[in-house]
Amino acid sequence: MRIRGEEWERAHSIFVSKAAPTMILSGSNQHVITFAKKLRKREDMIRDWENNGGVYLDYCVIVNKHKLFQEDNLEENAYSLYNQASALVKRLSGLIQRRKFAFKSRLVSEKRFLFNEKVCLSEMSTKLGECLVSFHRHSSQRIEATFEVSRDLTKLLIPDDHRIRLMEHLSSQFVLTSA
Image 1 (cartoon, rainbow, N blue to C red):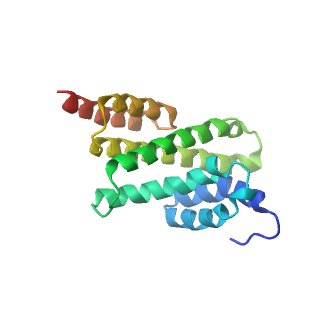
Image 2: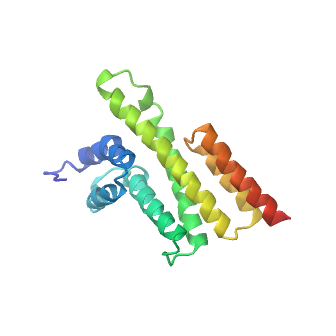
């Protein structure tokens, strides 16, 4: 990605609305990380980087950490990962809320990109929900955190069947730890 002059804001906009969703949907999380790190170097020139492009970057990092965590190849503990995922849930739900109006656009030229972006945010929500529940299960969190996780899951753009499955996992863990 080459960015000329002072076009960082425009590059960020294209990254958030088109490039990152396309890359995530095609399973190219490493490309998202590569491009996002280039943009992050200029975050001082990009309005609200942390809550837009930064969400895509942090999502890909968390998903990679989750994979390593499941393979027992990560030194970081589940409690720290749970806290990172929980903070990201709040930022992702904020991004979803800010984008809801755009999803109702009637511009034919934008429909395909908006559809990809919405599907991507749903995919990110589902995967992040899975990470959050997994990290919570392994973190020996207090019982009250179970309610925080369930509340966080309702803020994301997770399809109902996936949300129900995640809630079932969370509920069974709650019953096991409170018994």
